[in-house]
Image (cartoon, rainbow, N blue to C red; front, side, top):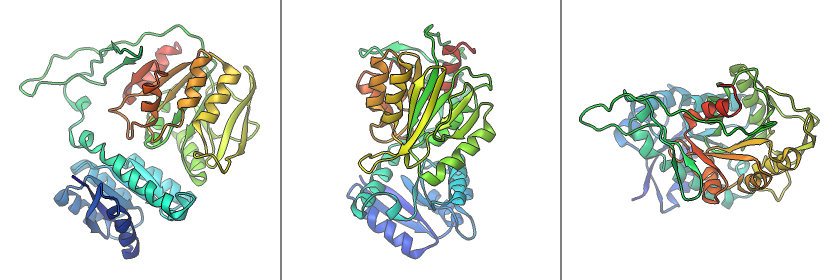
Amino acid sequence: MAVKVLVVDDSSFFRRRVSEIINADPRLEVIGDAVNGKEAVEKARTLKPDVITMDIEMPVMDGITAVREIMKSNPTPILMFSSLTHEGARATLDALDAGALDFLPKKFEDIARNKDEAISLLQKRVAELARKRVFMRTPLRASSPVTPSPAARPLTSGRTVVSSATATPPSRPAPVRPAARFKATGKQYQLMAIGTSTGGPVALQKILTQLPGSFPYPIVLVQHMPATFTAAFAARLNNLCKIGVKEAEDGDVLRAGTAYLAPGGKQMMLEGRPGNVRLRIIDGGDRMNYKPCVDVTFGSAAKVYHDKVLSMILTGMGADGRDGSRMLKSAGATVWAQDEESCVVYGMPQAVAKAGISTEDLPLDRIAERILIEVGLA
């Protein structure tokens, strides 16, 4: 059965163009459109689409308000279309806070290097987001009266999977049990590194806002994001977090308690020795699929810090981070992956987990807790 899509935009030209692209993929079908947020809320309820594409600036009701209303009444995966401006970045981040899962530039020429690639990317994003629908339609288990009770169970790959909750029988609630306590491995670290893509802004915000200002190590962040977005995203995180967060600049000296976000369109590398490590921000490179690229940053971290890196791969499409994580693991560093259920897109973490690189698969809502225990702050 084809993925049902609702297209929302006040421009008839853009609605038609997006609909043509989506309908050209046999996996997808546009079942309706809306010209403003109010109409989108109504059609989300009556048509029950699998995915919604949403503009931000519209009359009657804007896209951000519409996202909030839809997520309250009829949770549905939503892909936002955004302008690549500073104001567009802020609005898009607001939409992600409201519950949208992903975004793409509204100008298709900004999405990829050519028309065919841009069309393929849009179709792939919609298809991937549709897979999240089953989790969004089902009430979150964490919202039940049962306290999450993770049970760690070893897999044949040697990883540990920690579930975020225990299923509750429909007839009566299960007894309340305390959450399983993580145990620190006893390893010593000098750096934390996180790589992510689709769904990453919300995931990073959830994790980083729970870290104390006294966090003992510098943090490097690689989020697939356009160049005009990373400065706004870093500023938002800096306002919300106790740690410092900044968009990385060439020559930055890594300091404990500060997170450095790789700038969009560039590559971020580490150089020097522990205690005196600087960031190199270099051209993204025409042959690189990702700018910034997790593999590039993780690989350079392995060369500088060796086994003293606590790293993790969060939600995202594709396999960026697998090779860099393999280099970190070969150097003796720790690699974790976000679990499938809490990911917006289980691509990057799956690549690391399937390769046997990650040692633990963790639900998003417990990653910060796991970090604090591992580094001795909880």
